[in-house]
Length: 270
Image 1 (cartoon, rainbow, N blue to C red):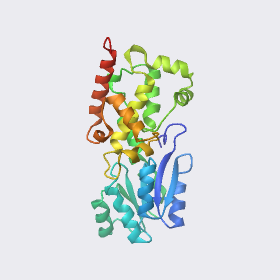
Image 2 (cartoon, rainbow, N blue to C red; image 1 turned 45 degrees about the vertical axis):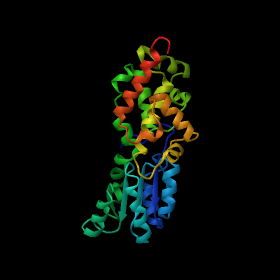
Image 3 (cartoon, rainbow, N blue to C red; image 1 turned 90 degrees about the horizontal axis):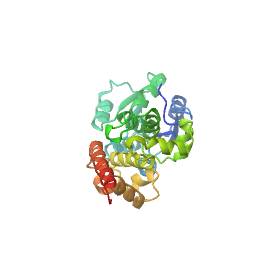
Image 4 (tube, rainbow, N blue to C red; image 1 turned 90 degrees about the vertical axis):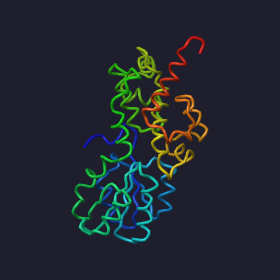
């Protein structure tokens, strides 16, 4: 199993269930070192959590109180960037349950009993933070991150999936001093460490804002920005774009805008 997240960062799973059996199963699959589990009982509570926390994935227990469980499952339509899994005591041959989950574009079914030993292996690859880190595993060429230290720092940053990170924390993970990291990171034409951290946070914000259930305020809160204004200032400084426009931009678009801002700053008299 690959590392769950960067040192000091816990993946977050939302679990919608009234049943102790399901809670125990998920906690066995994801011990504290692997993920943080937050249990809720209703779709309303789930939506509230999704708007204030960076939730990496959701498991909805369909084995009890099915009316409320399906309301929670329907949240998948509003948060497609985070995977939803349905835990069910029925086999996938139950065409009605499987078809309804498919219509909601849920990531997978977790069949009670049969899939118990494989829950972690089924769920982990689809989690938001890990997919985000995989998508950005290779530093974009325009950032000019070529040295081992630059690339290792990049990996640490993207593994946090847009969560705030201090230079001191990165330096500790890389076993160098903060001053050494800051100085060596921006060598050979690379941007400063602070700007790259902010760029990755804006990339994560753009991804989350593609969720119909997220707005700028919710994403600011989930990613740990001090306020919506803080996210706005950061996105304008990094890519000269308003937060309200982030949802329609791809990562490649934001990287292009970041490069334009960098070139403008390098011009004489800028």
